[in-house]
Image 1 (cartoon, helix red, strand yellow):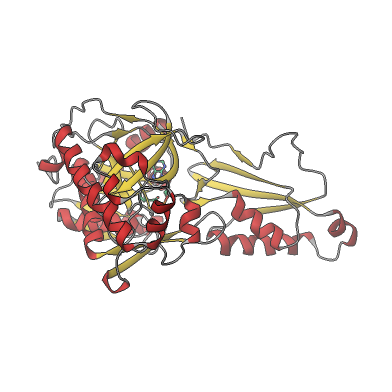
Image 2 (cartoon, rainbow, N blue to C red):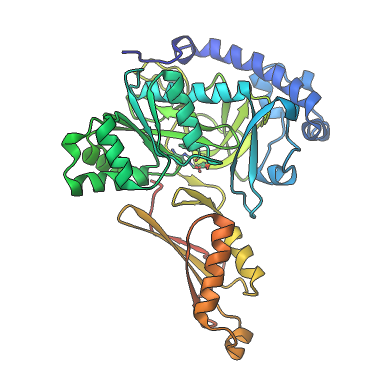
Length: 434
Ligand code: DLL
């Protein structure tokens, strides 16, 4: 059975990989300077010229890019290729409601799908497999990414998308799905449904590729038990391409970063200082092959550590350990990225003050999210609008801002505990980061 999708790259000696990264970085720095006004100005401002970048040891000279830059440059300001060369967008929500739109040339899509193909092969996929993709399709990168990777491997691909558990189980049993791709919380849901219906023996599943949200080792264990599979973690973000930026091999001990396309750094989130291998800090990526949306030194806000320890799978690419948290306040709820600031925007737009709290929990395998907000003293005094009507209006505002159903409780003034320091806006009872 094929162990690697691209063995010459996945097992490339570390010094050779550094040479390849250097060569690509030098070209990419020149490319963005010449083609993206934003980078031209930003590099001039930082006093860096493309010729100052002679290899990866010069990477630290380049300025960081943040989500705010993406928001300010929305939609076309970071384009590195003419629009006529772009063939696709994917998108995700942004911090204040403005979406992040990532562009792809056909070559960018090919690279992305190759990364997903590598992840699938690492989980044991071959052209004999039936790959059941129930990540969401559409603007979200999960479905399209794994779908493309599955085609490259030559698996029979089932583009199921998310939801409709009965149909998922029926196809899984009838078509003999062997590889499952979805969020870990949906995998846990499917595991439970399989158990309830006593279906385990009718399924042929052997592996699952689960990511897009944090999940614990306990969840891995439960999913593996309930579905009778080996569960592999996969990481990625829309800005950098989507799933497949890194993925686990059979060792299940950290995710190999696809270093021929992405250079990873770990920085101190407060000072921006680059940290030595093994220290926990914020993950930063530089894309060295992407053309349409070529992000350099992009701050992911995910906190983790890297390991260059030799992996027994034979892959030489550096591993990132499961993210330990975020340096901002983003949460992934029901598979969707949610920022408290988005919720606050909806509440303030409807006349409330910033006296609110967000309670996130998990009931069974499903996330719940409740927003509790106080009436302003004037609202409470006038009592013009029934509480139920108010709650419905907020639910609908949040649905169009976030795309998910949020429970809302409107409360009397002064019922939410006041904090003496930083306001405690989020109570996340799921404890998904270890
Ligand atoms: O979640 C891409 C993806 C799709 C990854 C399918 C894996 C599988 P975004 O919607 O842009 O992209 O969200 C990216 O999700 O910065 C992390 O905070 C979180 N995240 C993604 N994968 C993992 C993971 C997709 N395996 C954000 N573990 C990232 C923990 C993850 N967090």
